Length: 395
Image 1 (cartoon, helix red, strand yellow):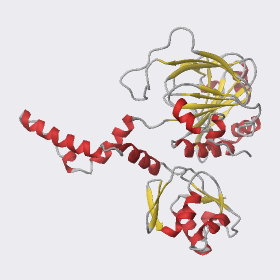
Image 2 (image 1 turned 45 degrees about the vertical axis):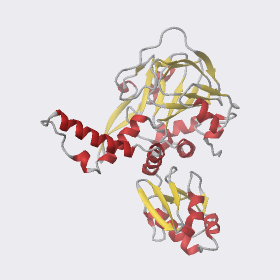
Image 3 (image 1 turned 90 degrees about the vertical axis):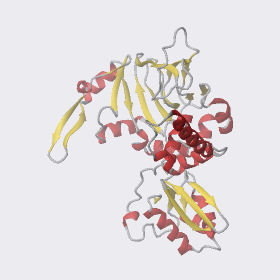
Image 4 (image 1 turned 45 degrees about the horizontal axis):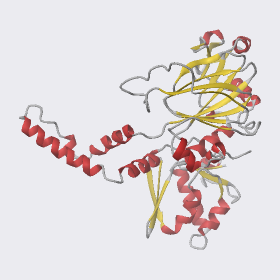
């Protein structure tokens, strides 16, 4: 199975150029070899997920011509003795809707398809943002959705088939989900009208209007959504920080003279300026990484045993926090992840440096990284501690 990264998706320009010249600025196509994404979400896996999972609306939904198809036309709710009502697809009615031009949408397929989950973990590390992957499958020539804009950036991976894209660009710079006004609908012809082929990747920034349609044959693509941090996010983060200061917790002088109100405003302004130092963006982004939640991976059966890890050093482990922040000092090294901060002796740094990221690592390689300062027993104890903290799992 191919281990995909952001570099693979945006080739040939490279990740640094993608961040500097494309991300948040303009849409861009990245042509690729047909069939290269076939293992990410083959039709057999789509069929398996539909067959084996209870997927509630709207996680599973159908859309046609910009409108959602009523769920009762292709599914039913059945009563079970233990769990109450559960959804169940009606296969014949479901297939009839698809033949009639409906688009199938499955949300959060990174939780349902193993290879897509691995891609999402790698991209969370590369993009430093939480990632959600949705699946879209269509037949015929109808539009699943009318022209629209998304409140997140998107990387579209064309797994099979082809689709026509029309991109209009933004009508309001950098619109937000919570905003003071909505972008106006675009007028005139699109800026770009093209066909995304099997193996291609497309990047569309937040707020860029677009519409998509199938071309008379089956098509399946993945939309990888992520929301880069904004200045509004930084201000919200600062608002949480100022609660530690009594001056910000104290009531404002509503009934005081204007001069006293101005004095209070000046005192608060000075404190805000102190918080807004030159390094405030770096501090905010590092804390955002450190607070990012762990991915869901239980590591059974080993994590339910007293030893927490497989006995064989050939077994692999991975940090469940792709955006973990490692900070080395003269005598200690700290790992900040999932809202926790763990401190280890500086000798553990080589082990932790190899762990940080999104890759699976053999226990053997981590033991070798720690030698000779840290012995095998101590390395395994460190890994076991990370398991108990919910930050690491074996496979």
